[in-house]
Length: 157
Image (tube, rainbow, N blue to C red; front, side, top):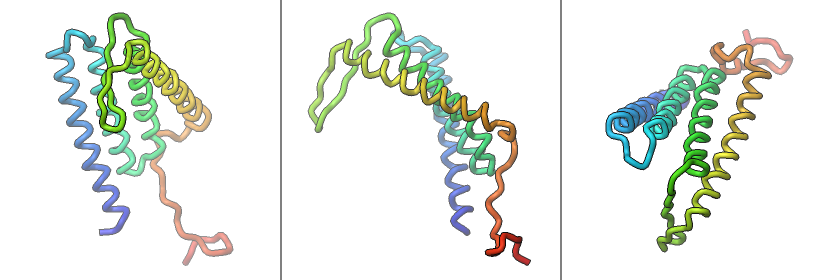
């Protein structure tokens, strides 16, 4: 088995795990929602896993350019989750630890961190979208590994 075949198998395995986790989380978020979390936010969390699986699957098949689309959607979903925590209505409480010492930051600190993260991932999503629009004419094409060439630039015979 070559290194690229091993990488392909690992990506396919990871894709399957991500898609299964996303499916489970989506089902749980929709059928048994947490009272403090809107079902749509739970579905966004599930989509993050499912879209990661889709991107890994496309990469394993050699469609690395096409994999940018689910990655864009994944980052957009992460933006939505962070925006709900940072800017949504209702009370928020975060827990954390620093060097193993647990602490509970204030609601303002919690919202500031997640709101800032939402703004950052939103900017990343816009940058991905810009790159898709600028160079996206061949998004659906399969990428080909670079073929070996001779020093003079011609194909080997």
